[in-house]
Length: 256
Image: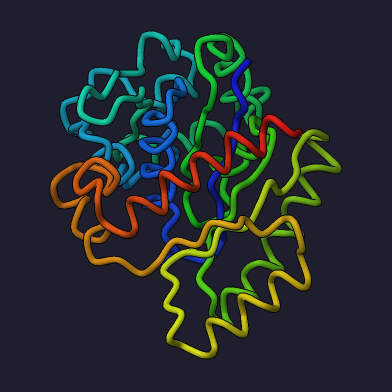
């Protein structure tokens, strides 16, 4: 059965999509069967996985409105080695359309249950806001991976996210927990980042992943080629770090 994880942070620009697509590619590289679900109407994770969001016949929008199954809507990205349930601008309309329907926050969970035995990992890229889309992701997931920069404002955003996860855990999804915090865009030369990193470790302990993703130009360039950095430049420092993170994830899940 697949382990389902949301990659979430209510603060924008922290590398959620970069983390999702590179972790998906890294997990595929170490032999895992992966489905990447894009829940952001911008469709960046879709494009960054080598799938053209403009030419998709079906998307996560159709799955949420129950007009298509995941098996019908997901496509396999040959370049990246994992399946993609893509998103495009249509998804923004789903917010409004879901308001009136039954089980609106459980639509994704129901759909994923049908394919859970086909994958080892299902990764969900959530939008930065706490919306009906993010709520669908949190209700479907076993846990949350939180990418964060080691900066002061990131700590503020983390408090909000932890409170949100507690509320979802209490009211909608008792399985939900923070799996771990991933330090991204890390520059060890900056004293503040080292200090925040130490604060995180002292406060969250084992919830902080050992792997640290360095600030890396090649990771930033990769999306313009429609690829995760892990595929675009496998030898780059950032790419190697994400493969190491994928291995750490597999080991951590085996211990759960």
